[in-house]
Image (tube, rainbow, N blue to C red; front, side):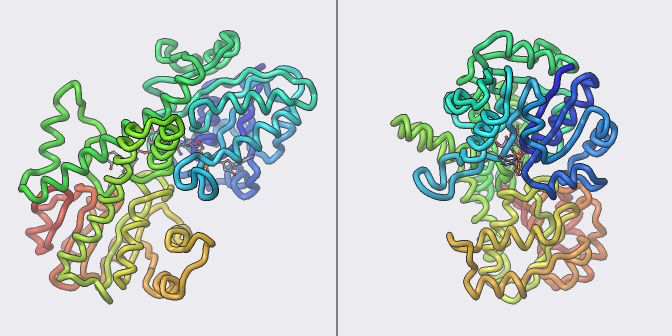
Length: 464
Ligand code: NAD
Ligand code: UGA
């Protein structure tokens, strides 16, 4: 029986390992983490990750061939295959700060594996890593305390949050990079339990590592491209959704990932592009670095532009005005707020002295305040008095769209949650200040119907 250990019980480690356990009943899967609270949550009825369909799979496998614990050394000792799925955030200090990936968690895992392992192990990089990280991982592992031997594979994850279960069930591809064909085949065998072998691509280690960064850079580039065009649409009376539909019918372009928005968020797009930029600079490829950096700059511009438009439209001041913020997660169907455009928009509105009523169906109240604190704090993690007062006094986290909009001058849609489309807008309108504005940062509402009710509607990349 194959035994798998996964170090890192986060948004990737948890769902991916649950799927392997679900599809491979004869494989024993042990997911470990240093964070006891997170492990406790994986063992409870309220999982730490909200993802449609995830709970059912975890509940079906937990206690059978799927285990969550903090017994990291034991899990390493017992496993044949060890996945490393820890976080690789952007470095905030020292050389490469603000760009390079912080690999300290990866290094700690590699050292711990080197200390605890016996015999032969396959170590799989599941985290997203700079190209050639496997080289460092191999060197650390080669100093094994117990004479263990290792193969290192790269197996980046392509799931998107909110659709993780369907992405894992039916992936466009599984990518495995490595050197030793026997080790590669061992991992191919695991995925081949449910993924067509034709969809399992094998490459050298470096192509696999670099493909992951490149895939995210290309996806983010599409969003920044359509968002750039949205700004042009707003001044020319073209409609960005019509433009997207028109270009998306070209089979060479394709229709996906052309939805103009308030800006992309999520833990990875920005981090991975900045990582790519840093790598290019490291290798002296300055033009290539600048090219990709523009994708992030365009995203910053889009987020800032959204807030500027709100303020300008509302007679150049939102000071003292109550504004309803609908949605705080970086996309629908997830409780994840990492790098959500909403955090930036809320910060900018708060600094205009607005009063915010924030509602998100899945994000914990404290998370919203923490995100704002983290963004507004200085490098030492401290808030100045003014920002502290703004967060304490001007932020109200509420339980419904209705509660958020009550008494408000405007509604800003920052996440495309389905429930926002079916809100009772007649009633909401009657409870708002007039003129009542809607700023649809996701272009999901029926703008004509809202206008008929009496709202003044502003959307991304189209005149309403
Ligand atoms: P996460 O922060 O949700 O989870 C990482 C977990 O690793 C945390 O629970 C943390 O406690 C744990 N951890 C850190 N150091 C550890 C150590 N030394 N020993 C044991 N546990 C440790 O991160 P995530 O979103 O799951 O992302 C993990 C990796 O996968 C990142 O490299 C990310 O870029 C990549 N990725 C993420 C997604 C996504 O949708 N979130 C998709 C594809 C790839
Ligand atoms: C993204 C990739 O889609 C995954 O393949 C990848 O595995 C993952 O990053 C990762 O490496 O972490 P994710 O960030 O979870 O997945 O979600 P996406 O669906 O890609 O959305 C990212 C952001 O772009 C969201 O804020 C979303 O609202 C925005 N977006 C997406 C748009 O504004 N317009 C679009 O057309 C598509």
